[in-house]
Image 1 (spheres, rainbow, N blue to C red):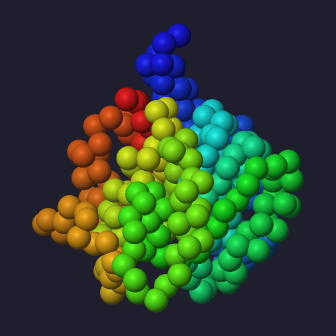
Image 2 (cartoon, rainbow, N blue to C red; image 1 turned 90 degrees about the vertical axis):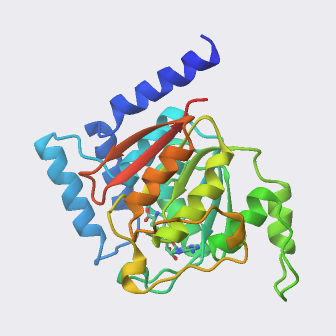
Length: 276
Ligand SMILES: C[S@@+](CC[C@H](N)C(=O)[O-])C[C@H]1O[C@@H](n2cnc3c(N)ncnc32)[C@H](O)[C@@H]1O
């Protein structure tokens, strides 16, 4: 099989398996192994369980990541937005040797629940993905400040912040990533920057998961992202406060990916697979 046939076969396998009930069942079990989150977890578990009963093959970010990780068997995983590790646990459960990079600024009480940070996530992974033997590196801070340095070796201006550790992490980063999640900043501009940062760093046959595809964004709640590197991105002309609008723009720019969207997800979600 040549490389192009291999990538096409992988895409077809992913498209056929998203929402498979066995994956939903396994996703459910891994979520159950994680710590209690009385605010958010019961609703997600009930939604997944309802789908299993109705056999309607519904899927959302964690089921999608489980499916992608099982099929791709990623060597490397870049996750923007980890929170309590619900996504990460799915990837680690099925790809126990993966090399993980987590980017999060650990916003307090995100989703009305504590967002404790790296040591909490490490402990969660031990419980939910006990077979994991890979490495997790945490890049703690604002993705718009970290990603250009980490992914593109941009040297930051002297601003009093010590970037030594980040620059060392960048020296050892994978050349490209087999799997990427963009689920951090939910402003349209912030998601635009994150997606533009990561898309050129996806390996052939690798995938990006974008959560979420709502036709609104956090600018509507007054949030405004900041980046010392804002000038390096094309502007969002005719701006709309919409994550879906950002995704549609990304699709127009990166024609070397195949896109799968689920607008019935909880919330809606997009997947992009690099075909060439
Ligand atoms: C929606 S949650 C991630 C959920 C996670 N993927 C899961 O499956 O449970 C978003 C996370 O992104 C982080 N975040 C938001 N904006 C960010 C930014 N600009 N840079 C880094 N992290 C950010 C928040 O602290 C939060 O932990």
